[in-house]
Image (cartoon, rainbow, N blue to C red; front, side, top):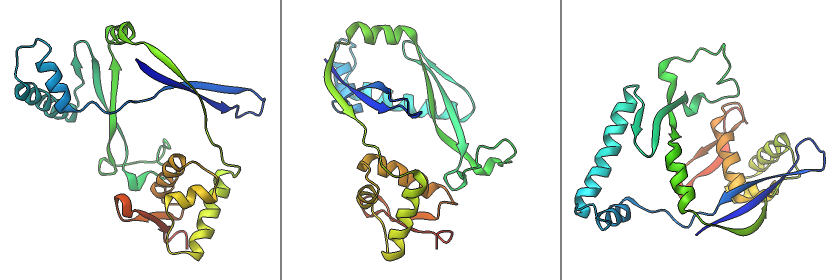
Length: 211
């Protein structure tokens, strides 16, 4: 059984209508160790260690061929290909302008595309039973993006650093949205905000452009 929720978003054009999308609620991650254990017990005739070794080797070989510019097809799953884009320190507002001449040293792999096999989707649908877990409304700030940036800078003029929870509080945002927004601001060299530290110690500060 897979649980899902309906998320509602207000219409951006102010027509009073609401738009919705549906999202699966993830139970938890099914790790490589568990996957190998399950596959070894499902009649494959291979010990768990051997299955795990194959899975790890598969990821390594795929990375090698993708890095060489190939796409990789896995029967029953789909076709994997690369996505590229400007490096983090080059992702300003004009990073994707056609006239912006980025050199190879300013580009990096930003992710992978998976073109899913139609039979794979059919098999998932055959096995999947969905259960409705209600409606979730996304919390929207009463401030515009420009106002939120200014409020963050004003806060940093009086304080040494800004944490995600404080950014969420002063701008009336959920913590998850605040985290994504601050990450984008820190990646934009003209925003005036950058970060120091990693993980739990990561905080946001004014950059040279923001002072």
